[in-house]
Amino acid sequence: MYEKYAELLLKRCLNIKEGEPLLINAPIECIEFIRIVAKEAYKLGVNDIYFDLTDDILKRDQLENLDINSLKESRFWNKTIWNEYANKGAAFLMLYGDDPEMTNGIDSEKIAATAYTSRTSRKIYKEKQGIGEVSWCIASVATEKWANKVFPNSSNPKEELWNAIFKMCYVDKENPIEEWDKLVSENKERCEELNKYKIKKMHYTNGLGTDLFVELSDLAIWSGGAETLKDGREAIVNMPTIEVFTTPILSKTEGIVYSSKPLVYNGAIIDEFYLEFKEGKVVNFDAKIGKEVLKSIIEADKNSAYLGEVALVEHDSVISKSNILFYETLFDENASCHLALGAGFPTAIKEGTSKSKEELLNMGVNESDVHVDFMIGTEDLNITGITYDNKEINIFTHGKFDIK
Image 1 (cartoon, rainbow, N blue to C red):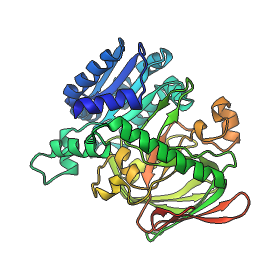
Image 2: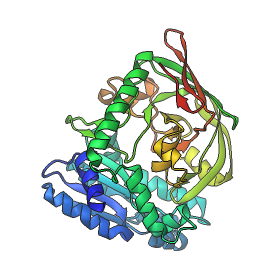
Image 3: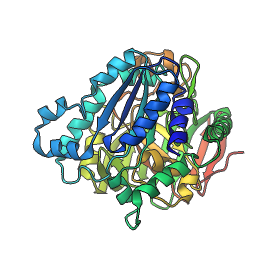
């Protein structure tokens, strides 16, 4: 299973080329799986691998004992080496397995400062990622503390979490790469269907109290499943991925939206929260858990209070039907429709990758150092659309696609 998973990540997700450098960011607890990935990469002709290994216990020790200036110098958050590898044309494999409660009790200013350092210290990487100049993939690995959070009553939670990851990523199938080829093809068909409607405005409502209007550009492109890089390769940048998504006009969101699942951000849990928007910006918010951390996201920079993504996922997706709350956005966002605060996608706007940051902003694509997904989908979520030729369509009814 581990070898099949490694092969899926390298061959299908990254679509890695012979001789291409590789940066692997992963928790040191999973060193045995990292060795399997490395061995598979060498077989594929990779001869330059940088191992950016992390450890939740060491991270927390630093957060508790160091001041903010010292934390900014720590390799756990200062990621300038990523820029060096981005300039070399490397592929980037990010393996997540963070303890969802790693930063409980830590000063929210330290959480915000380290998150800011992590984002801004790798600007070259982020720029190349945004325009498809580097291959990248985010996936998950099972760690003890994360497994204990997800399966608190299990006799072997880590094994159970690994099995859940394998199942959600179709690694338990005979040929996972073929399975993902089929899913990517189905997602492309869904995107083509959405793109032909030319949706101008989306109205979200559900029983939690969500009543939100989001407006899209007439140049917006729905994407999902895989991303075509500038060199023509097709990469699956999130494993797993079921969503279809696009970028909204940053100044054209109005109303209120309620979260439907917890959000884990830099090891802190934010739960039972709402955001109220006016002229695209969050003007009011609250959370029963993690309000200060939510505040740090909204106030991270001048545009982090605006949306950068709208994503659609049916409520009966394979991840949703598992009835597992993963406390990890990578999985939970694929169980639920979601939105994202912060940066939009140049690739989700027609000819967006050829535009400057200023041109993209003028087109309504958000420019921010953050991009934080949060889940809003429910079984009773309805989404009505108004097209650019003034037709009303039902996009979602009771948590499922309803477009014809």
